[in-house]
Length: 267
Image (tube, rainbow, N blue to C red; front, side):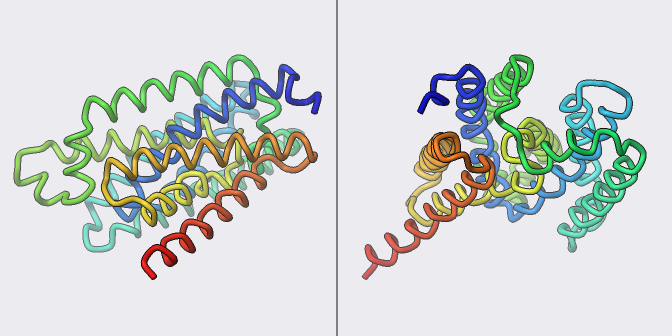
């Protein structure tokens, strides 16, 4: 139990608590807009940026963040090009991200163990800079969601009606893509690029099963994210488990319980 008082573990709890707000929140918007797989796409592109950061000796998360933002712009351009097949844009960018990451891996074999921490998560290695970056992203995301909550609600449930009403749909689509890129970039060191989409989608799936309104969904998605991340970190710390995997498995357990509760309630 001494690990709970360790400085590195407290940094992990702070970083986890912050990302447990923004990750599920952005994931809810993505799921409602049927863009759940964008999390995987931007995560893979971010890993390519992380790898480049190691190659050129620049803060990896910053380079990953730039890559993810560029990828979000590219996805939006392709979505407008392939309106009938919007999911094709996600597949194209994901393929490019994986290809670029694999190329950069072979260029810098000496840092492969460092990159593995971004693939599978390494929340215990968060330093003060990482926590500060995560806190900054959290403030930005929450501020934009609160300022534009009405516009985002309309855009999420009826994009065509939003466009007809004069809402700058393209601006808000790009804004959501950039916010998602920010969240994913700072999340990969916590749960890993291979699991980051779980943090976005599973809490959203739980809240949509349990909630009866959009406002209730937002509240529940954040609560579920916080419970899973903090409880998962404590369990992983006490029993020496993989933090990212523990958090995701706990989320799946919460989802199963949520579905069962809903069925019992309806019965």
